[in-house]
Length: 315
Image 1 (cartoon, rainbow, N blue to C red):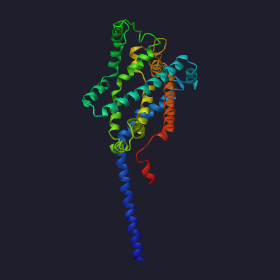
Image 2: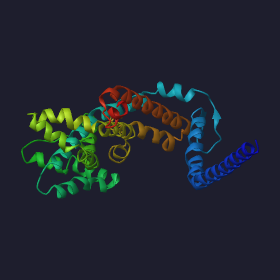
Image 3: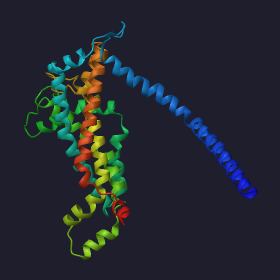
Image 4: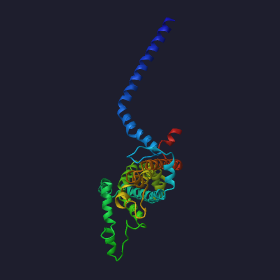
């Protein structure tokens, strides 16, 4: 009995020591991450819920916020410019995202092959990503200039009168969409890194079995790249819905609101019209749109995305 009692005492003392040690480790953990936690609360969490509150108020920055409930949201859905900005943004995304992804993936596959000077080409393709978006917008503003722009000067040599690329509402959005393809380099490098992880033995086995290039593309390369393609699609959707700089610098949303992107109209409401409540309401609507689209993409793509360890868990 004494031995049993002593054993129980030893076990309880060991458990107490372990409990104290785990508490110290937990306290040390929270101490180390406390700078991040403080920053997250002050710089993210408080502004996030602050903007939610402001979206239910009328606040012109210089005066105190006045609670008006859902009026900002009601005004937005009866605002023709707001609806126009949604249409412009979705049209832009529907055009640029598929084209940019297909071009980036195609060029990445080309650079992944035994191409001479592949390293130099990678650098050249990536260079536009190093240039700031402001500088790129100013550069493309000159290229699209109606009178002395590079494109219209080139067309004039063949007797073709070029359009007013950014001054004509029929061409303005197309021009900005073409400009967006300038930054393909980031996507190319991203896809190239993924292509280099595709197992070579699968391609070699498929070649021995007589599979052609297209068959290997759709049965090996794309399934192996599917998680990367999914991530790229999600980030492109989020980035496309937040397009701002090109329209702000080149067209200011014109002509006739044909390039009035959602983010630009949000900015105008906040800092041009001083309607901070309406701007915050727009920000939360955009957040909801992004969450819904992301959930739909994840749901639809689930059967088509292959993860390497999916089969291993069942074995």
